[in-house]
Image (cartoon, rainbow, N blue to C red; front, side, top):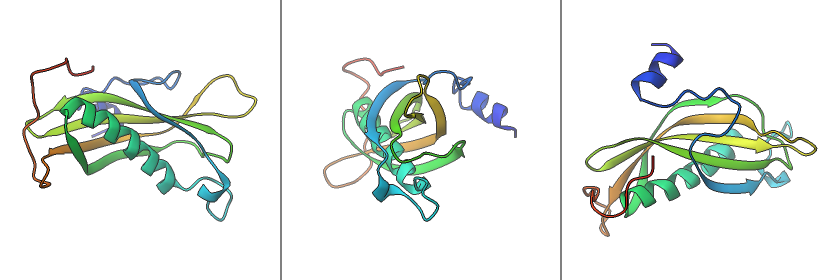
Amino acid sequence: MSSNDRHAALQVPLNMETEPGGELCIRTLAMPADTNANGDIFGGWLLGQMDLGGGVFASKVAQSRTVTVAIEAMNFRKAVYVGDLVSVYANLVRVGRTSVMLHIEAWVLRRKEVLSILVTDGNFTYVSIDDQGHPQAIKRDGPPIPA
C-alpha cells in the first residue's frame, strides 16, 4: 500500500506541506539539551513533543484520561535544529468505542524565516482509561468532537 493509499484509507486529509492541518496543541522551542551528537534535535524528543500534544487533544475528545497505545506511519521529513520553534497540530482521524486515532504534524519556524516547515507527521492512537487504568468507553454526549 502506498503512502497516498494509506492516507486515503485512514481518511486523513492529504497535506500539501504548505500549512499545518488540524488544531494547535503545543508549541515549544528546540533547545541545545535536546540535540544528538550531530547537533540536530533528537527524533525521540520530537516524537515526545508530538505525543504530548496528541495526548492533550485526545483527552479533550475522550473527555477523560488517555494513554498512547500505538504510533504508526511516522514520517521524519526534515531535521529540527536548535532554536526552531516547534508547533504540534492534531487532526481527528476516527473515534472508536474506547480509542481515538489522530494524525499529528510537527511544524517548525526557523529563525529568519516567515513560513513554517512540516518536519514530521504520523498517526497516533490513544485509549480512554478510567481511574484504575482500565479502558473505558468514550462518551458520545457533551460538546461536539473536534473535526
